[in-house]
Every structure is written in C-alpha cells, then in structure tokens.
Length: 286
View (tube, rainbow, N blue to C red):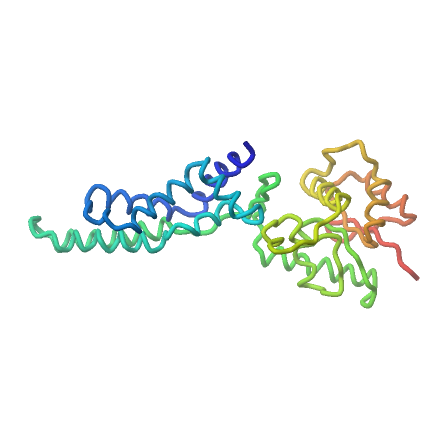
C-alpha cells in the first residue's frame, strides 16, 4: 500500500513539474486515430505500453521496486522515449497538415499550426516551481543562491565564535547542513544530504545509526514547527545523544521553544548564544 501511495503521489508531483507528458499522450492518440499505419511500428507500441505502465499505480509501483528505493518515481520515466515520441508526433502532424491539398488556404492553416504547436510546447515545459519539502509539504520560496548566501553568513559568524582553526562536528538543520561542506570543508557534519535525499545513497553501504536518524527527525521537527512530535524524550537526553554521536557544535532554529534551548545548554554546561536566526551551543576548549 505504501508503494501504491508513493506511485500515485509521484504521478501527481511529476505532472505538476511539467506537462510534456501530456504532449506524449497526445502524440500517441494522434498515431492511434489519425496515423493508424504508424501504429504498426513496434517502438510506438513499446512507448504506449511503458507509458501506461508508468501511469498506472500498480505497474508504477513494480517499476519503482525494480529500480530500488534509492530513486524516486520520476526516474521510472527513463524507460519511456518521451522526447523522441513527442518529436515524432509533432513532425508527423506538421507533415500531415502541410501536405493536405484538399483544404483551401492550406498554407496559412499550416503556418498557424506551426505557431500553435510552438506555443503549446513552451507552455508545457517546466517553467520552474518552488522548492517543496517532501517531509511536511511546506514551501520554501528562497532561491538556491539566497539559501547558500544565508549559510555563508552563518558559517562566517560561527567561525568568529569558535575560531578559524577549530575542528568542528556540527549538528544543524537541513537548510544549513545542505551547504556547509561547500562553504567550509573543514567542518564535519553529524549527517549530510544523503540523510534526506536517499538517491545519494546509491551504491553506498554505510548507513546512519538509529540515534543519528532520530536526531535528524528531531531537528527537522524543530525547524518546521518549533516542537517535537515525540515529546516523551527530554532536551537533556537529546543533547547527550548528540554529544555521544560526535557533535561538539549545535545550531538550533530560533523557532523552537526557549526553555528547550536553555535546558539543552544547561545540560552541556554552557550558555546558548544567538547567531542570526539560530541558537549556538558550543563549548570552547580554551
């Protein structure tokens, strides 16, 4: 049931990002009803069969299982020659229009068809969309450059507090951890992008411990809502788990409850410092 649900949601997300797959269906219908002689070609039947397989949740779930969990729904469309079929359909349609001699003003109608197809092709393309967090479906309207610039500023402030040469193991929200290594390669992370982007784990055999995965979920909850979904665990326990996992520097989002920040800092024997939109928990070795 989970595979079927992911397949169905994947189809919805896939057509939201671009409508070229609609042109693919139109091209197949064109060959089916107006160019029936073309349907004798095996590659058209193959395209039609695989397209139906990618759309139907049951067969799509089978394809997703076959390609392993490292890849999401959109990757199963690599078995469909989408671009080639759309190009073939457009070419056949234009040839059909331009060579039609029975209609009057055929030339003007053909030129209009070319212009119309060009407009439709542009409108069906991927014109860009906000970045969506797959975990809670919240929308982040910051561009990638703005997010990266924000992290550069935070890491600069972090280095001013902790020292330029100090080795750090950072536990931070996903929005910060995503760009830390590109900003300062000397900083190690409790977890990287492969924690939330499972496709990066392809052909990798190292896995995170359950404790680190739990710490990631806690930080994600704090970043999204400021509170934990699992409220049975204490802030002191979480701080201890992070230290045992190797983190000696913690960035907490400003949205979380102040009492939680204070309790974590007290358990580490330090005071929390404000660092932009985050709270810094760091114990200097000096």
